[in-house]
Length: 392
Ligand code: SOE
Image (cartoon, rainbow, N blue to C red):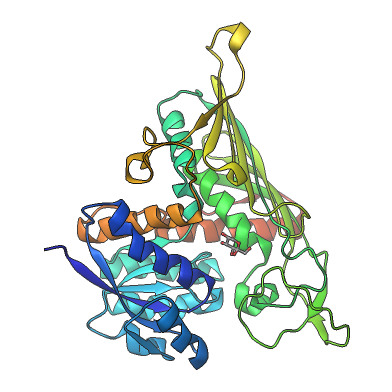
């Protein structure tokens, strides 16, 4: 009989929806699944959201107190989908109660918190996953395969972007994402870290960074409810405005330990860009280009193609590519956000059941926090700053 794991979901918003869909769908895509997931209990400090989350995402129970869940002996997995400042406390208590932890990104609001979280996972021997899901896109996994096979040679340089426009409107409300006490950083932690994760995964560990950060929109209208109102516009000019205490633009140059260098740029204020995660990587034998808004595809150029046909070619991912045979039977039916979440969920559950390494785990999440710390420091000193690299 298929093993069953009970999940306690902390938070009942956008990410709880994404994770719940993945728990239900994963066994259909990865058959036979390493385990089925029983959506046992959902928690939100707001009773209305907790009750609604139970119905909407089909959980057995609801609660307003996460402590009940992390200490419940029935629970195998604690899934953290709440704002960033709450990750540390919940994860630490869950790890000490020997629960496996699936945590939304960024993992914490400081590297000090993240290091403690990572150390605790070693002490209590639990599996973790940090939800940097975009690296699970089959086209990104294919890029990894090409790089590992040496198909583009030694990596020389790269550029990455994550551009959105949901906060470009100065009347988009002041959600928790603009409050340093809750979010830690702004665009850097919220979306810049996704590209940091992809570049670390594909190119290698960061050595030094040189960064610039800006806050273009210095105040925003307050909102009644702490939940995300991404992309909303507050028309009423009488609504009080309060300061934005985080960055809304950042760019940074990176030197990697293997000698490759490049840049990353992130903003949520780039009109017209919706979820524009891109990277272009140049090596001694070729190049790779990816754009998440066209995420079924990857473009590659191989230097040893005959000169008269050398250039970028487009590969549409499908059953012949990583996880392709688990997804859809022919290419171009459409890979989406959900598929990346399903793959992420599979790797996490497989890691738990078959004692396999998971990635990105709390080590990776912690290393990303250390990179963010160096980025913030560099934006203040206007100098290159070394990234502290942890040993595993
Ligand atoms: C908002 O910028 C956001 O929801 C991020 O927090 C997610 O990580 C990203 O995947 C989509 O946009």
